[in-house]
Length: 183
Image 1 (cartoon, rainbow, N blue to C red):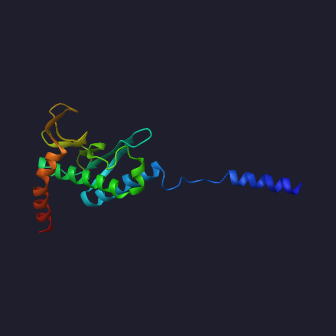
Image 2 (cartoon, rainbow, N blue to C red):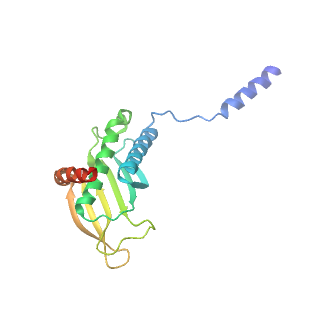
Image 3 (cartoon, rainbow, N blue to C red):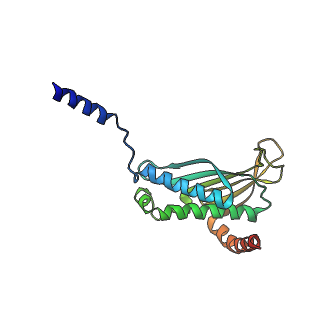
């Protein structure tokens, strides 16, 4: 009888234990890459995460991040700097986390496999006036720069470029912006 009672308690307590996912599952690795990217971009570029996700049933074919940016972006060069820095950090974190590679549809993971959206607004959460950059996005390998239209909730795309085009324009401007910030 004691044996039966002890055995029943043992089964009950072992069944009620919380079992944590092992740290190398697809979900855990994806979360690690996303949180590392978010943490770095918040510290370095003052981008505040507002959304994340991914796509792919068996293998990861797409990862996405969305951010708020609470400063005015004066021109396309500043917007390009924000987007390209975010893209490079995101891709870098994916490459760095070797345990994630077995879950990727393509290895090395192409830049076209990530999506980044940056929503530009003031600290009150209001959009900047018409004609100012409002949304910066990187989807399917294309950087898109959008301004507020003159109607409510209207966005107008003012410039699109491929990642390769943006990268070739970005390097000289990024070096100039970095040297100005250090002075």
